[in-house]
Amino acid sequence: MLALLTSAAAMSACRPQSSAAAEVYSPPNVAWMPGDDAGADGDAGADGGAVEAGEGDYGAHDLACAEDIEGPGCPWDRNAVRYADDGIRGDHSPSMEPLEPAPLERCPDSAVMGEMSEVPAGAFVMGCELSEDAACGKAERGARALELPAFAIDRTEVTQAAYQRCIDAGSCTAPAGGFEPRAHCTHPVVNVSWAQAGEYCESLGRRLPTEREWEKAARGTQGPTFPWGDASPSCERANFGDCGLRAARPVASYPAGASPYGVLDMAGNVREWVFDSEPGRGRQPKRGIRGGMFTDRAQNLRAARRSWGDVSVSDLGIGFRCAS
Image 1 (cartoon, rainbow, N blue to C red):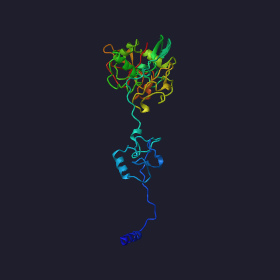
Image 2 (cartoon, rainbow, N blue to C red):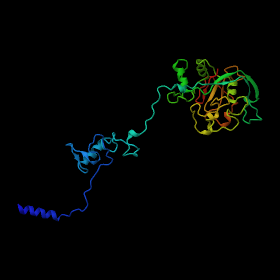
Image 3 (cartoon, helix red, strand yellow):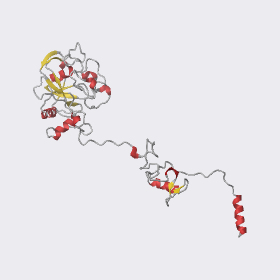
Image 4 (cartoon, rainbow, N blue to C red):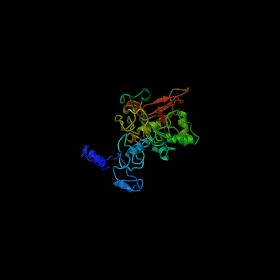
């Protein structure tokens, strides 16, 4: 027996011995869990004692993480406290991604807008002269001074939130399309006919503005080319074709484009129904449409520009505002 033990010891001595210390494996990104009494010095063993680093079956730990990558001590530990974005794929928890905002159940009252600007009585210049404005259209020619009594006009185009309130009250019917009041509370309501626009204004004890009222509210008493003056349109003043948005923006997005009376969006964003019939059409008269829209050229933003549409027309580029 002694001979066998001596032989085994001799064989062990003959084996090559590594001079390097044994490598201690630690699982990546192991988060300390609340209640772990061992803290950074070691993990709690099955018997409650501390397990020194390097001990334990880390192969089992890796298998557990493969099954549930958000488990305790795993790269996406759902309970770990993280103070910064850890990166992408592999150590970034999906729970850290920003959530899409849920659609509003109802637009806030502030989205209804509806404030009105007062326009005092007095004379203003309507129309234009070809000698002064090369873009002056045939229907606009012949600038003349007109007297108007005082009136009030909506400071902004009617919003989708405001129109939805009218639908809820049973006084208005739904637009033909492009109507998403929960997502676009303060966008102008569009795709409404001339009659639908009138019904909305009537529900508030108001009416559609006349052409004269609309133009005075847009130009003031001095008769500038655009609501803000004679300077060429820019994307700071209006939403039009050169800006490339090709869609309506929320009302009041361009305060630099305000008229002398503080009325907004009278050039660009969407065109607007007015009350008047097209002159010279006795049967099936068309109704006036004023202002420019988001796809118009700069010259079509002129405050004197006139156009008309059939009363049944509804379009993504036509909205309205009310007067009283």
